[in-house]
Image (cartoon, rainbow, N blue to C red; front, side, top):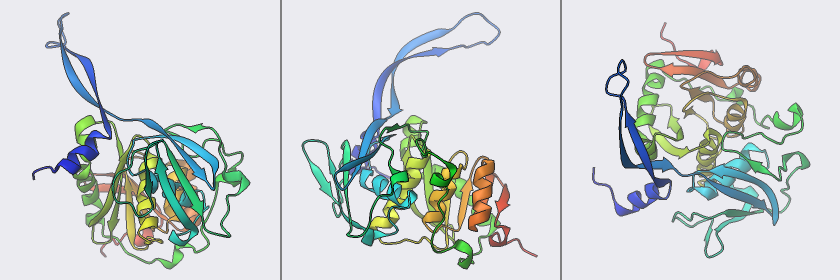
Length: 297
């Protein structure tokens, strides 16, 4: 398939070119090596500040692009907003340009300004006025009570059944859709699928939690929450924060290609989420909510 110039620009905005020294050892048993200079593509990582009603909420390291989605999804994961109607407006500013909530172009900037709807406010425990690395989504929380948030509507009402064969096919579909990873080898991905295994949305980022926030933010801005009947697949492991983000977005099944943490499994069990780990090849482990995995009699 021929790549459009818009697609090429989208990938280039998420990567950075760097000169590297390529060293090759032709024979591991021999004490010799060859070296040559070459150009390499790296996944871009830059800071993004999120401001809510004019006040700084957090500063996170992310891969540029889909920044409005990231901010919207972050607010869902912090239990600040529950849907599109809780957001009055959003804009991305880099000092020279701004993109608005209904803007379809990629506006890569440094700050996302969010205006909440009347009556919607940020709780004291949600504020984290310091940098969050691309590996940390709950840094700065003061207690376990601050990070353990369950939705108002429990997931128990979502009785969607997912075929094991369909689940087993998802990692291959996710990998095939990771365009920036194909160029850099350095990004996590999150993919949203329906019960038939059709890919609804995919986002990539240096931070796994950022990729999930971008998926949830896409759903918020499309007014698709809650994401009933959907599967969220993440590259790597399933952490506590990813479980919470899936639960608050109304996603009934979270799958990961690696293991979950013990706290992730505990929260999934409490929230009624089906948690699948080690989804590789033709096998998987189901850590909670096995009733949604439709095993043939």
